[in-house]
Length: 264
Ligand SMILES: NC(=O)c1ccc[n+]([C@@H]2O[C@H](COP(=O)([O-])OP(=O)(O)OC[C@H]3O[C@@H](n4cnc5c(N)ncnc54)[C@H](OP(=O)(O)O)[C@@H]3O)[C@@H](O)[C@H]2O)c1
Image (cartoon, rainbow, N blue to C red; front, side):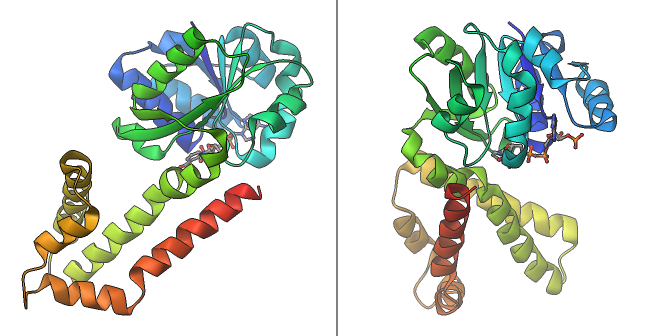
């Protein structure tokens, strides 16, 4: 089985890094291409994968073709590869906002399509992917792609109607979490903590808190209450966050992201 990446940017690199680190595939089973020679060479050197100069060459050789370009370039990429895609190949799109029916229409023929919304923590094997497929994708093909996605994190099947929501809560959300970590660390630095140590404390507490939500199954509000001692320090921070509209701001940000995804 050969997996071909069209686009070797942030997301493709996270996925390739994850698959290789897990040992699910070897570099000889992965090919890729990008718009520029510089990106192709960088990927070949870093991961040991084979690169090709054209999108059509990748589509011709690969059994699974992963479309990892920005949504606005999908039309031109599909035009490049459509003649190389036959009924046996699986096309996997990771583009935000582009539906299975939009993709199928662009190919102008029946094509096996799997739509995935991954996120960049794939790079450290802690990604989260949402997955849906069209009727042409059989269970064996689907399970193989799920296995591929699970090599770099969790993968969940969702109805396609929830894909834009997944963009808001998962695909884009690492950026909001990084902002949160940076802001907490900035405050620690302002009070004299060395920068590196501040990132470690802030990031580790986000990591541990996320694990508590997932592993205890407790409501996040209950876990918050456990940290807030009466007349203590934490409730003071919570008061300021509430006064400044922290939760409403986060909700508005996620909703803006979902809205953008719906209108791409
Ligand atoms: N970034 C995320 O966290 C994230 C999360 C979930 C989903 N996604 C989705 O993943 C997709 C890729 O995002 P990204 O962040 O990885 O983008 P990116 O870092 O900008 O990478 C895009 C890649 O596409 C290549 N490219 C552009 N035009 C091309 C063409 N005509 N033919 C072949 N390759 C072409 C670029 O080549 P050059 O490098 O040579 O310019 C680059 O390697 C998007 O559709 C996005 O919606 C991203």
